[in-house]
Image (cartoon, rainbow, N blue to C red):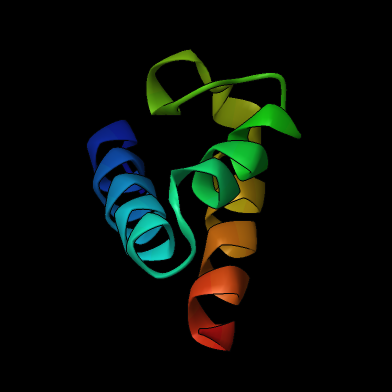
Length: 60
């Protein structure tokens, strides 16, 4: 996937998680990888963050 694809997928899923559980839950996923949002997330963690967010989103 391109960086843009990752950005869209991660941000959309983070928004979905935030709408279900509150912004803090979505932000907590980024914090696990020493980031606060997509813009300062290392590309090495895109798949992990997306997977974590998807798991939370699907549990909702």
